[in-house]
Length: 290
View 1 (cartoon, rainbow, N blue to C red):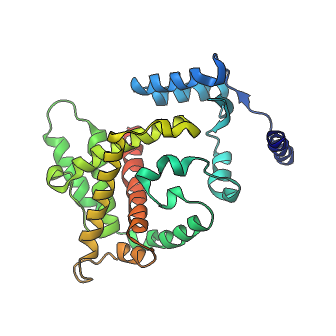
View 2 (cartoon, rainbow, N blue to C red):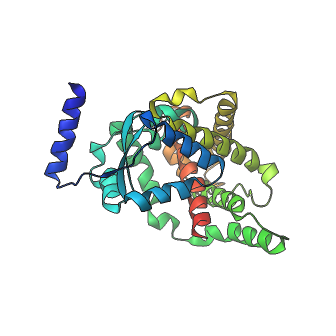
View 3 (cartoon, rainbow, N blue to C red):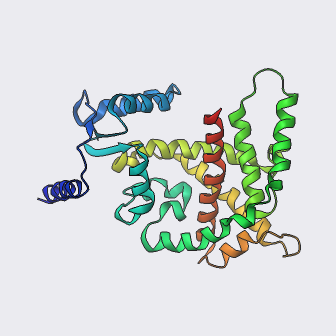
């Protein structure tokens, strides 16, 4: 009865907005097990994005699929994304996302919804006003470091790895008034430890997402240790910057956010979320653009 009511409600919403039924990706095996195998195989062969793009080319910008017995919808349509992320944000929940990612992300804005999300947004958005960051000189040193590495390198250069360091340097300079200068001295700054831990934790999180409500089947000591190292890196940034006097650090981002956080785990969660947004997504965008 509950499933029938949900289906009827979905149909009513579709009629009200003039929606057409999406194309449905056809599975070859029960419960969509073949989709899971296909995704894990593509990931292991470093062609996951190619697989996803092939589905959109075949089925269009929005389609339906059954994944481990669960109905799911996939979209890259700008209008749909705008509705989900902006105009109709309140109508959407995050499902199991919080449970899947909490070990790595902590209690930050990416893992919140409702009142908690609005509270975090009210705290964080003012910190990113344009006038605070319109002086792009903060980029100069990090970009110069990147150019120095590339210009002196021999043979093939892995730009994605360098982009991860670049965006970490720029993000910490933006947010905390000082860069960790990982492009200059990755070992001494701990960037390699953070990068390795972040990548490991992110890999596990991505795999957990693919299992939806069965995410708990993926999680082992390596994942736990990686999450611990990510939290340790965030704590180092927090301790170093909160210990400084106002005269030593003209950037009061961390102090402003800290005033509105209930405790250290809450502050750490927000910092990790911001570092993820500033480091990982930007580096991937740069790599994808090239």
